[in-house]
Length: 508
Ligand code: NDP
Ligand code: BG6
Image (cartoon, rainbow, N blue to C red; front, side, top):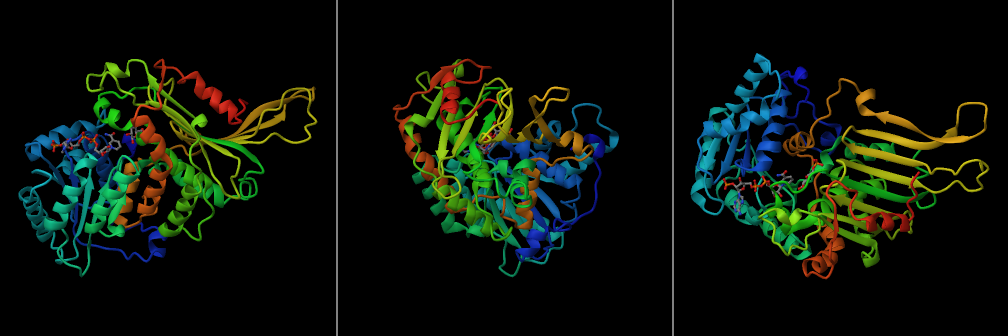
């Protein structure tokens, strides 16, 4: 949020209830809302979760007379120490006004810290006591209180934490209110471990209580995909194998694993980015029109796409590891972990047979960018022989500088009848000046409060996505598939560009 646009507007967390929530039959709920950030001492909590809560607070979605926020972790710190740690992530870097500083302080006062372990009841009983006191103070009718648990924690502790929540911290009555649990990625390491985790958590919570977050689903242009595809006559007849030659979904970062090498080395780029973020985007690009916008209708269509993906062909995979990755002391010298991957997926259905979906992700590359590039086939019977024709492309840039643009061929202005490639450009910064695009986490946390699971991953979706990548991942883990070295700051291994060309992509 732009600092100049800060203002607190009083809204209930259901105040601007979405048509979708209404359609799904969710009734507005009131009563105290307790948001518990487990792993409050960690990186995600301070960089993303608390700032997202702060922005929701500023916009009036977390009214102080209903809401209290609890941080929970093992680290022994006081309320004030946690607040001091968070302050730097909330106060604008330059020129904070007195009003902004006051907003930060008021927000920080909503936060209470509880220290405890993740696998014993003492800490969670204490947490429950604190939550109950807050509920009592806010005059909530017992049973109508809402409890949201956000697991900003390593997945290894999800089962024990869920068990503790179930044993000690549930909303106390079935009369109303709710208890919801948000879990972060990576959810498992392969099909078997993900299913095991799902089963364990599934014994404790019903599917509507579990919010598997994938923050790419909260990005503005990812959320726009359904609208773009299904509300525009332009796209309806063209979005298929008859017209589209290939689709690229690309994630690049211009920095390495930066202090997260220990975590990253156990997962690698496919588990960190491709199996979740890029595959979710693929689903929205490739799925059929859902019956309605109800979460279950959308997720049913996503599962169908995932189940139609063919086994990955070895010839259509390029892995890379940037030079210097192993200099990180937390990364083993013999690490085989890819920090770059290009993988071609093929969808075996009537719409997409024969169209390669090229998923590419890499760390320490030459730029930071995430985009979808849909390349159309050549125009048949071309009559403009004077110059090589460029192909039409529809590019959806997720970040930075959100944009949708169409590359097309037009007449070169002037006396000659020659052609040139140009763009129809919808750059959000220009078209929507002054409009603040919400952070993905902000939007998704609000969805969890509203009970809208549209942008969260369902258990069968997760299973289908692991099914696609597990055989390849096992071979990488066993050292059968080796990453190629590439220079930091480059495009990645040259072989990835060759694969792109082989898959049919033509540089326009
Ligand atoms: P951290 O490593 O910072 O861990 C969060 C907290 O968990 C720590 O402060 C620590 O708290 C506790 N913790 C750490 N390791 C262990 C352990 N082995 N056993 C028990 N507790 C432990 O993780 P992040 O905050 O980076 O990530 C949290 C979750 O979010 C992970 O699942 C991660 O994959 C995911 N995620 C993170 C992103 C990021 O940018 N950081 C982005 C997207 C997803 P204490 O010791 O005080 O209890
Ligand atoms: C996270 C990955 O899920 O997404 C990180 O664990 C990555 O490795 C991050 O840096 C990228 O998110 P964004 O929103 O900056 O593209």
